Length: 485
Image (cartoon, rainbow, N blue to C red; front, side):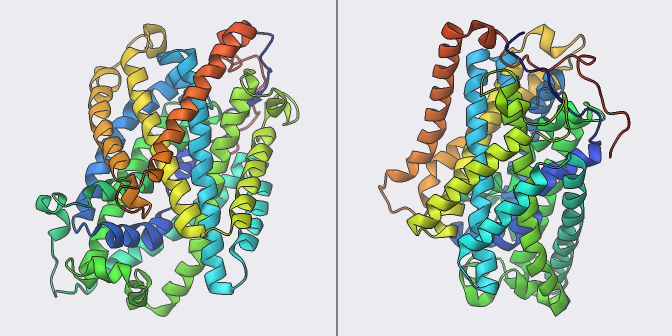
């Protein structure tokens, strides 16, 4: 259609391993070890956190079945936008696209607070200065070809996982009680007051594993989106469960919550030090790199959402044209737009004098996790009602019927647990209403998207008709001559 910009992302430039790395790096295993797991123990006092990780990862993996099946068939870089548009309707597509932009930006920008505070604690200076340095690094890498980002992510991810393995071995090698204790996997440990908060933290730890869906246009093998996404969920869910178990064993399941809440206990680095002081130094350095690579992964996804929605005229079309030529190796317009938004939000938090961890990181990452879980639910619903033209000639019952139904049921339980415990997550007092601003932001964003779609339907029907359908045909835009990675 005339409203579409005939540009495409560089096809056949990202291997299945590359997609898996983006999903795993966005989840940031070292960040979960150093920050997520200790904070969850401290705030929820749930000793069965390892089992909680297993159960949450299982639900997210089932949700990812429908998401990746739809992403593979639709083939749209703005995955949730394209999925909802094809399965639920064009208005739902725009609503999902805007919610995805808010959610991914919230998570990505929250990490600037975490990084700034982490580096300032170790090297001194204001947190926002270090956040500004990270903004520049991510901004430069973000406008480069995806291959460079993948190499950086792969290296940091490999070293991060090595450190996590060493931590697990250090914890299991010297358990506090002198023997292995399986209390972390005891079902009775789920029947406690903080379980909703623990579920929410586990969901937040797995956010980002859906990133491969946004690289489908650049994938060497589109079918690998499912393997990359579901593989990342299962691998990371298992890694986090074992890591949480090792932390509980290292100090004792009954004492881990108290130790995690005590800065003097030094979790998890005190346990890592059992393997040698050099591992602590390496973990300190790699933690910063892990945060930056998680930022880069989310940045890359956001840039593709902006690019793809601009290509269809839902966002300003200039954001799609900013890339040079018809085959875009990196969506520069979307990348620059994300850097601009992140800079503005970081500046606002800095000028407001808010705590970069307690306010910026916690609030924004929780908002992002809420939004992305809601989108995974929407993707399962879209798969359930998708027309035959989307499902393909021989749809399998697991991907298009059973998994979506199970995913909607399990995902609804997780979402209810998150919304019901959002106050405790954010440290709000009893009866406080302000934590419910986060669910309200998600709902409000969806409403804005639906209203904007209605406006397009009335004023620019040619744009409305093409919502979720603007990916150029295979031969309309030339491919790369060689596979880059």
